[in-house]
Amino acid sequence: MISGPPRGMRDFYPEDVRLRNWLFGLWREVSESFGFQEYDGPVVESEELYIRKSGEEIVGQLYNFEDKGGRRLALRPEMTPTLARMIIARGSSLPKPIKWFSIPQCFRYERMSKGRRREHYQWNLDIVGAEEPTAEAEVIAAAIEFLKRVGLTRDDVVVLLSNRRLLSALLKSKGLPQEKFPDVCLVIDKKGKVSDADLHAMLVDIGLSEAMIANLFDVLRIESLDDAERVLKTAGAPLAPLDETRKVLECLSHFGLAQFCRFDISIVRGLLYYTGPVFEFFDADRKFRAICGGGRYDNLLESYGGERVSAVGLGFGDVVVTEVLADKGLLPDFSSGLDYAVIPFSEEQRKVATEIAQSLRSQGRTVTMSLETKKLRKSLSDADRAGAAKVIIVAPDELAAAKVVLRDMKSGEERAIPIADLCAP
Image (cartoon, rainbow, N blue to C red; front, side):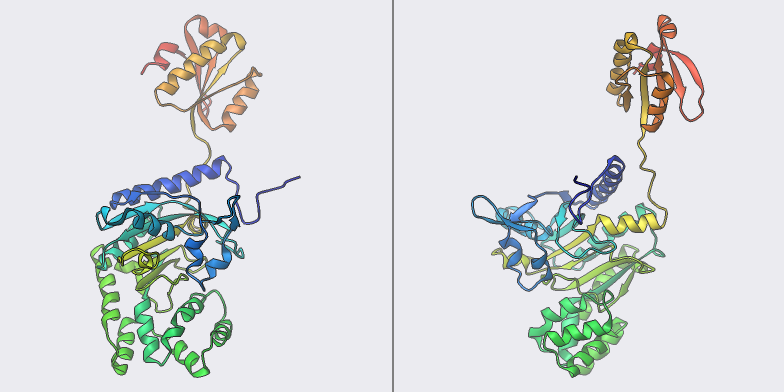
């Protein structure tokens, strides 16, 4: 007997689909309000699209296989490579900046934990062809707008912002070999998920000396952009990455969102294609994993054979935000909501009952109808479970006078009403 879906996957019962549709609807509303256009791509892609970024954890998490034609394929673990492939395919015919969004289902074979499944839906926002920090501010502002629409405030959510270029400059000023920087980022991304002792062991494994590790932890203790500036000035290092980070925060202040944001040098994101500002959203109490995250990736299209184009993206999964909203009691009631249930008293009234149901449906009402004749009490119970607000009982005595019985399921009140009035447009 098959008892459930594959490990890490989810079934979506009707109430789950209603929740999902509500979430997707808000994502679409916010995206369109910011001028983004929706796109989509195949759930199965060439394996090469992902494995060319060697060394990343995601490569070992692929659901990959060989098809009957001997081609190596994979279920998509993320959407950004598909975006890059699609934009390269259209070349210069796409006017820039490109502002696209999507809500793909993604798959990763990874160890499950709270907020982490082996499949999830993800709201992706990407701006391609904009070099200014206004792009980072725009996608962050869109994500905050969604959170505000579902009832979360600056007391509930914090946006932690950093910059890969700034972290690289700080570590270089402390003597870290630059060739180690990609591996260091993958380790730092685990900060807060594992102990400092585990981080230390990972840094030893990638070849850092004890002195380098000590310097790295000193950098991770930097708490402000002013502190970072002092370190860079002491080392005589360029301040451009620092200025870039400040500009992102300044742009967010133009949106009136500075109070949501805080600098945190340890934010790096787990994918190596990020090149500049990066950010992650967390619940203020840090009870959950990151709600969403993203950043600038200026070299990704070039790595796939396209031209070098500046790009900024955000990925916002459905799992963690649903857990946060449930924890705060902010999820709407997703019980079924029907306008009417139509109950023919017997098979003799079914033709009229069907005509009434169809008339109401043509007016845009949601209507279910008893598909078999049952005792009235059982039919009323079925209508209540289906979530019908009102019940129309097509009974012989009322029907003889061209009327039906209309019952309010909440109050229990009943009254006879002419069919012509009920079905009037």
